[in-house]
Amino acid sequence: MTASAPEPGGGAPDAAGRPGPLLTVERLAKQFGGVRAVDTVDFAVDAGTITGLIGPNGAGKSTVLSVVSGQLPPTSGRVRFAGADVTGQPMHRLARLGVVRTFQLARVFGGLTTLENLVVGVPQQRGLTPLGILGGRRVWGPQERTLIDRARQLLTTFGMAHTADDLARTLSGGQRRAVEIMRALMMRPRLLLLDEPMAGLSPSLTRRLEEIFLELCTTGLAVLLVEHELESVERLCSNVVVMANGRVLAQGRMADLRTRREVQDAYVVG
Ligand code: ADP
Ligand code: MG
Image 1: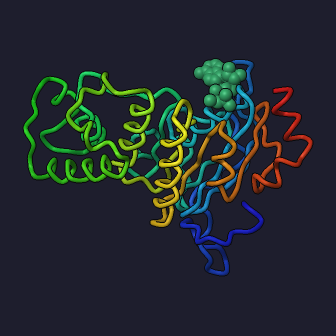
Image 2: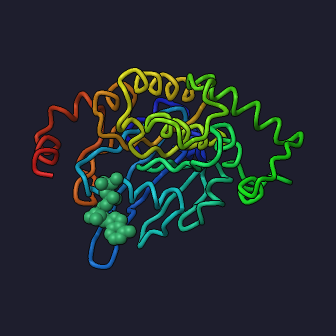
């Protein structure tokens, strides 16, 4: 639990009736054979806030996202989301609850258009499955039209409306990354887990993404942001968790963390 929680949390209320954090990670551990990738990690994320997760390569950041998103089961520890224990639940169930992640390397369907990439990401549709659309069955029903409207809105927000009908394989690396983030947003997540979304983006696209994330937070979205670009982390994150060697080294505001010796050492040595 964080020491101070000024924002409404979104999780189960405490004894005094205040909402708890939306996400709580308790003594989380993940081992791969003899490698302790994540080793007794604790932190919490409130609704409507962006929490940074930083640290040198190999610190265990992506593994934390994999476990929180349900892609990998933890070796031990607990994950609580919106007041419920969701430890070890599979990714599709967590996605339905509102926990959605993106990957360090953007994953897009190169042979589909940008618009189609957004629409096929959303599960639970009748008459439109990824296999259906990949097989060339592009028949849009009313449900799909709602999704298409939403996809077009997101494309406009991201400044990519002109690419709607371009095949994704013709997009730049930065645009593909944006497509992956939009596809996650199509799921209307409550908690968005982002793995280095700014990597390789131009300064202008980075700034645009920052504005979009901050805007989304005003609607209550919580974000757990793994990011190397510490300037972005400082601008976006109310709380930052620093990891090294699978453990939490420090937590707090980026401006304070920068001055701490153990954080500086982790980056230099790490
Ligand atoms: P980060 O994202 O902070 O760079 P990772 O979570 O990717 O770190 O990796 C943490 C550690 O776990 C590293 O030592 C990495 O080699 C190891 N690791 C990550 N995923 C696997 C895996 N699937 N199998 C074995 N080792 C892994
Ligand atoms: Mg990583």
